[in-house]
Image (cartoon, rainbow, N blue to C red):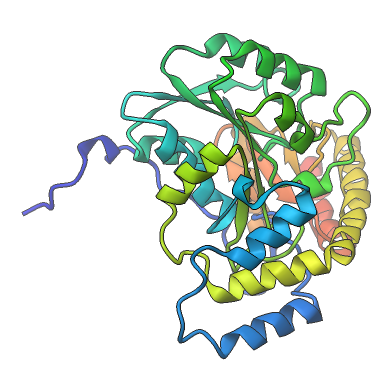
Length: 355
Ligand SMILES: *Cc1c(COP(=O)(O)O)cnc(C)c1O
């Protein structure tokens, strides 16, 4: 007997995480190389003694700390078990089966998977020639079935950002009750020029339908603890609260995130070194002949087309794990000099062999 499951999920791909091999350099998941700060490690250690109790389901301390830092009220913040969970819950609270979720493609793999799990329909608009989100094309693709838009900025996996003018024009063009989620998982790594620089929290004043998604997994280095958050209109936050899986942000994660916020300056200062390396790695890859768009995140994208899989396979064999996207390209996390150099040595070797 075959268990009876939803047949529409049969052809749904399973999320493919970055691979890990003992001894290899892992540049596949956009993590930071640093372990937690001593203050964060000790907050986690202190919290261990209370794990016989359920976590605070309302996440009061963390929510208030975030609200204070961001200059919003607690009613505008929802913490989630990683921002992937908030992506999924946003779909759940906006879509019924048959409704449409609009986003650029290629982009974050969670969007199409979570959309299909909810029984909604993904509408994927190809990136523009510069491998960035094509917001004018997306605005045209909005229909009366569109319930949610994801704008991944910077875009995972290409690292590109939209311009402020395009973003504002998009928000003006779409219905003002359409929920637009700006996924800013990598915002701490952006060093934007005047044409791109925007403040999502500021934009929310003009566009209350805007939802800002951020995470402690990347620049804050808590990928293993699973904490993300949404900033949105209280009506959206109330709905997200209904979809929230009870107690899904554990006590260690809540305490660690609060400690990270207290050490904000130190953690954010670390992003400067990655930004410096990003510029160096990009320049060197271009010199080697690779097509690499300018990245504003802690990774670079190699536009390799059909070479993506063989390139990633050979890189793994050379001891550096990168993230291939079949037929499209390879995403490589930028970390510290030694690790980046190991990848660049492989990339130089590959370019030489391919002539
Ligand atoms: C890493 C990432 C996230 C955050 O994931 P968490 O669940 O918070 O670890 C969200 N969006 C994008 C685009 C990402 O790359």
